[in-house]
Amino acid sequence: MELTRFCASGKIDNPESGPLDPERHADGYASDLILPEFMLRPRLIKMRRMTIAVAREIADEFDASLTPTLLKIVAMSRYPLVVVCHDRTGRRWFRRPDNVQGWWFPRKDLDKDSFAHAILFDGAADDTIAHRMEADTWFDFKGADRSDVQEQSIRWGEDKVLTLLTLPDRAIG
Image 1 (spheres, rainbow, N blue to C red):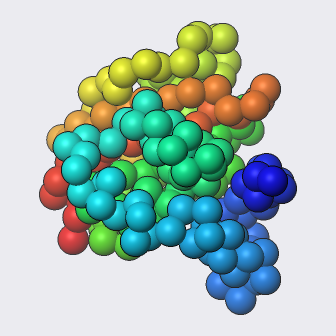
Image 2 (image 1 turned 180 degrees about the vertical axis):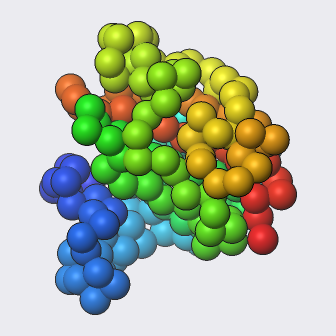
């Protein structure tokens, strides 16, 4: 039986769920069962760079879904990563490691220059590689235009797009 198939996508990292919400605690418990840190950490240490393809490989290895795998990787990552979900109305949720500085907060809207926008609104194919772009495509803090990020986006369900952003090393604070 695959436990990862029971989570409703609308409940994954729901911003309305507070830190004491039982659903959030259940997510953490399920994540620890399916993707135990003591087994995942050695795999992550060997990685030079995180991509969606690598996350899929890890998900397959642990018989887990891609989204919980990405969320777990980002939560325990040594990489400056952000995973973001958008639908046609804007950002649904995002996750970044605790060590990423707070101003790296993804914009609510999808910039028309992002590959995620092309996938969601124009029917473009999923990204198979990460693309370099100016950080202000994804972030609106002062000075974002002086940094670059790597974007890799895929269609998630029929009406959402899931994006993995790799931030510059200086985003870790």
